[in-house]
Image 1: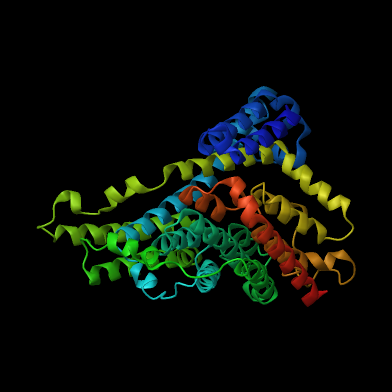
Image 2 (image 1 turned 90 degrees about the horizontal axis):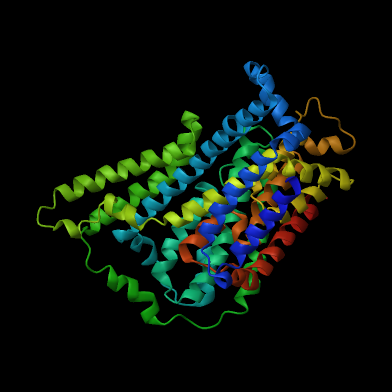
Length: 469
């Protein structure tokens, strides 16, 4: 079963990639894959957990001594169900509620024409200029919000500017690259950087100066290459059709601006909420959504002349939230968590560490692997294998210095895990969200975006080595 889990995982990913060929929705495949992986683990728990790869099962028993008197079979069940599935579902739920809250806020702003504040200021119809504007706005915004929220916001903006599907897909691909590159140099820009920051492996002062230039280069290279293939301008009708659709709007200009300010403020408030309260970010997102919800309820309560069907309340907007995308995300994360519980990811991390003499090559490979496997468990495995040491106790000589707090190993890990996910559209939270929102074909992304992302990825790595040797 241990080997079969890997086979099933690969087959599931292949089915997701070939969604349009096999005519099966990727969400259905992801959900089946997520559940099937746990079923296989449970069926052979006696063999897989006895190996105790990574020591997670022993650690669970040591903290739950009351289970030692139970038969082995019951211990395995308790560990998988209570110690792993429920824990992982809690972590996944945090991400899903965060995603749902962000998508709902963006949809509320969109339904009331709030993004016109930005789109009306983007006057250019030149394809190249628009590409650079969209990419750099995404890059810096993702460092403040996070790459997932930023990708959702920017796709909503993109729909106001470009109508043709394949044109929009090209720009959406650059949004993924820019969002992941922007999140890689900020302590709150990506889930993995948040992990490294909270655990004390990296500090803001040590991370930003070392990774900013490499992240910019990882965006600039794809931008420059893609710019050579874009020519001409968008037609006027392509830039104005959405403006015509928004001409009949139940909200006044002032109300649209307030909805935009409250909505964006709720997104920006989320990282602040986490720092101040130390509570999970999804709670900050939900409280922001509740405030925006209350504002719109009060706003529509005063509009007595409006018919109920004309009111774009949050209850109505929720029907437009892309639930299949949320379920797809859940299925993928469940499958990866099963691999983490069984020890596959720990074995992979250990192999990388033992196979290479320097501590940096594994980081580069982790970045490439994160294009297929979620980067969170990969980074978690690396953090577990190499505890960060303080400068006071770190050895000056040898490889140990790379693992010091703010050392090169941790910085390169943050960069590689963050930007490597852009190589495949399913390699990052931002990519999965954009894939769901825009229905981008997996194979199309490989043909048009993956090579660009790969060039940017290695260009950033090279920049880092040039800077620090």
